[in-house]
Amino acid sequence: MKISSKARAAAALMLGTMLLIVVSIGWADAQVRSAVDQRRHVAEIAGALNNMRMVTFEYLLNRRERARLQEQVVWQRLERLFSNPAALDDSAASILASLRSQGETSHRLFGEIDAKAAASDDDIQRRFESQLSSRILILQQNSLVDAEQLIEDAGARIDATQRRVVVVTGVALAVMAVLIGVAAWMFRRDVLRPIARLELATREVSAGNWSFELDVGSTDELGDMARHFDAMTRALRESFSKLEVSNRELLALNQELESFSYSVSHDLRSPLRSMDGFSLALLEDYGDRLDDEARDSLQRIRGASQRMGRLIDELLGLARVTRAELRVQIVDLSAMAQEMALNLAKAQPERRVRWEIEKGITVRGDRELLAIAFQNLLDNAWKFTGKVDEAVIKVGMREEDGAQVCFVSDNGAGFDMAYASRLFGAFQRLHHEVDFPGTGVGLAIVQRVMRRHGWSLGAKAAIGQGAMFYFRPSEQDDE
Image (tube, rainbow, N blue to C red; front, side, top):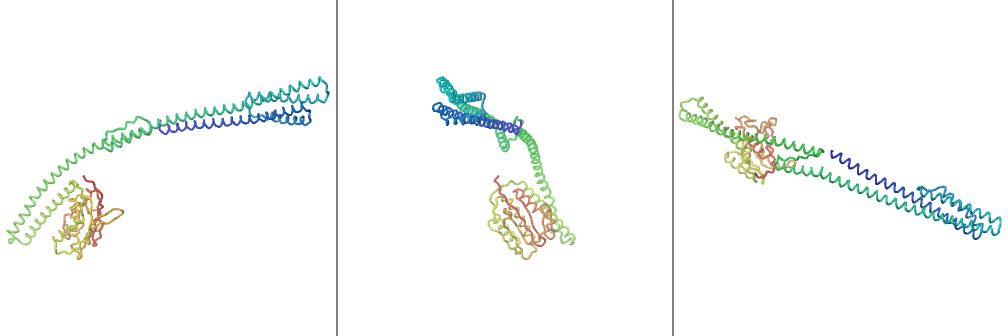
């Protein structure tokens, strides 16, 4: 059964029990009201009967007209009370009928006494009146006793009704307690225990135990969730197994590629050095015998071989950046930039470049990789400001969208942002080598370094207005 169905069933049982309590209380209230009305009505009858007895006794003693008239008034009141009885049970109705009969007899005998008193006044008549009087008083006394019995019955009826209410309410509350206990037990069994099991499963899976399974046998919503979770962990196990195999294959392939690249680079360097060396030897030994065209061809051969050597070095550097293990530490980029700026100025002392390097720029990263990246960025800024009379190179940090952004900017040649997507690819160049020599690998190395750190790299530029390269450093944990 689904949890929602169990909840609806429990709610229905609880509501049914509460409805039973409400109905029992309503029924008890009606019964108590009826018993109270009965007692009040019988009390009025008892009061009228007592008045009847008093006026009858007064009349029998003094034969006063006022007592006779009062007897008429009291009888009329009794007739009204007998004519409009309260709701009574069978026993009370029988007693009330007896009271009415006794009252009618008493009233009839009272009339006979009154008639006899006016007719004659001999001894026989007085003895007869005495008998009637005794009978009237006995009837009235019996009526009072019956009335008291009715009042006691009404009180007993109230007490019985209250006891029944207590019993019914107690039973209903006991049923509710049992239902609550059963609901709590079912909630613990069907909800809390599977949730605890699911929480344990998430801890196990997060700790790397992919073989853990919930194995919940219920058919409710949590059971469905557990089965989906087990299916997910099985799928993840299979995916990680495939990924592990792929990683091993990739590692082996990278190792083969590394060996191949070193082998190729070594094999390529030897003929390149030979080409450069023999070309230089020809120029030195036979340069005076060669014409200008031949000497220019040899110089071109030397330049191409040297450029090929630089390309090989750059590719190997790019591969090393990709493979290098990160050693995270605090790196002072400001001090690093200052040192590189001094080296560049010493290499070309004839140039006049204003350096604006902000103090205190520190990040957490790999010092060697960041040095490679910064060297390429500053080399590019130095190179592309070579044709500017008043060159300015800036290194700084600013806040952008709540994050710290480091940047290297210059006022050099710049580039067209329409081709910005080609910037960070190997051997991609936006300027002719005649104007700005280079291999086109530097920015690809910078992007690899930033990617290894998990940082984003971007650029902004305009033709003839310089360029700015920026990255957003984030926290790195020590490995």
